[in-house]
Amino acid sequence: MNIHASAPGVWFTIAAYIALMAVIGIVTGRKAKSVADITVGGRKAGAWLSALSYGTAYFSAVMFVGYAGGTGLKYGLWGISAGIGNAVFGSWLAWKMLARKTRDVSHRLKIKTMPQYFFYRYGSNSMKLFSCIVIFIFLIPYSASVYKGLASVADVLLGIDVTICLVIIAAVAALLLILGGYLVQARADFAQGIIMMFGVALLIFFVIRSNAVGGFSGIAEYAKTERGLPKLGFDAALGLIATVLMTSFGTWGLPQMIQKYFGIKDDEQAKRGIKISTFFALLVAGGGYFIGSLCHRFFTADNMPAQDYIVPMMLKEVSLPSILLGVVIVLLLAASVSTLCSITLTASSTVSIDFVKGIKKDMSDKNIRILTKVLCVLFIALSYVVANTDTPILDMMSYSWGIISGSFLAPYVLALYYKKLTKGGAWCAIIGGFSLAVIPAACKIATLFGVTNANVVDLAARGPVFACAAMIFSIILCLVGSAVFKNKKDDENSEFFYNAIVENE
Image 1 (cartoon, rainbow, N blue to C red):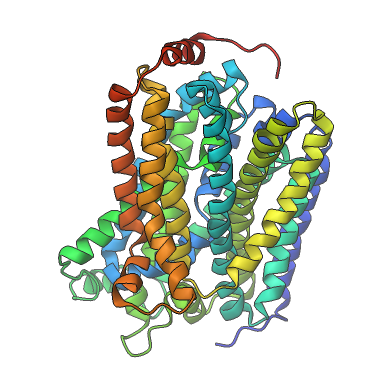
Image 2: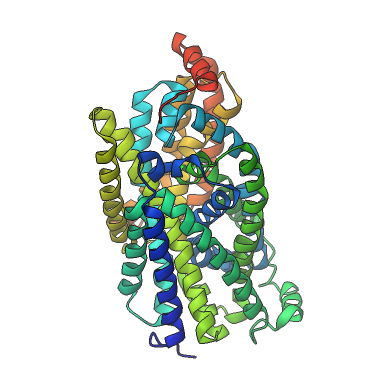
């Protein structure tokens, strides 16, 4: 079936989505009056807003297209374990262990960014500046992977130049951020979260009943085949486990995810958010990986598309009705816009609040808001440039998640529970985790400059494995380093972090 960009139902649905986002942006944007409104929504977000904002930032076209297709290709139905892991570890356990404690400390100390969190906990301005630079630079590949995921969908399902689709997602994301930052984004994410849940449910229904799958009996038959449930050797099993762990626990150290906890209104809303976030992840991530796991029902080894095009080609084979196709496009557009907004806002606010204001301390609140919005536009443009490099979606995301979570997960998470962490221990974790996680990314850069050594190429493809190793390694370094490196100010920093109350936002 050939799907043309001129199908009126498709464009009507896309136009309705863009109009909805514009209305939300204009109406809600008028309420954004301060830096706190832009970065943490005035700390007034309820359970549904917080949980759906978290979920839509978590899952984008990167998951639906890059990871769902990649895991389905390599592991068949085993790939569903990634979606289950995301729901259990990346949502339920993350909210259970992190949300309430993070909300408490961020409200008491009026923390707006992850670098500020490190400054208040460890009393290190250099740590704040270093984390700011790492976050801004290494969120760009993740943002670029969002572009790339949506581009492959536009190419296959709409048959249009991918540039048009990239301009749409960039324009909508920039609109939401310029109009009001987090305050607008959270409300837009609520609407986009509903669209994603509705769209995934419909998508699962149509994929299962398609001729290629053949209903539940076809899935049962598929599960009995080597392609459906392949026997996993050591390397394959290690790769799958690494993917599950990285995409689940990797969110624990990502600033754009942690920032969602900063905006939660109170403890009760944080408790309710656990259930909502878990349900959303189970439906959206579980459904996305389930669809990707069926790829061998659609294609043989001879006609299997390139990894980033597997899911788009599957959806094309399903022959969706025009309106439903529009819903699917909007589903992926909504997922991508919300993720891009979260990444962009996080990266830009760290630079304006933690880096620029750290140098120019008398900078006014109004100028910070303006600079943050300008940086948002710059970040979106840089992401577009990186998206045009020849790098698979899965690789770009693993580099970004691995480096950032490998560097910052340990000093962030452990600080919520362990009062004896020291600045020296935190630095050990950050430097050690960063050094290990950056290896695949460095190898990928080397291949872009013409290096063809087999070992370098192999290392460039092992982003998830290095990401997991970096997170584990950094936890060990943080604890050991805290036992070894101590100074007089560590106890003072700890006392302030756990007990102080800052009055002014």
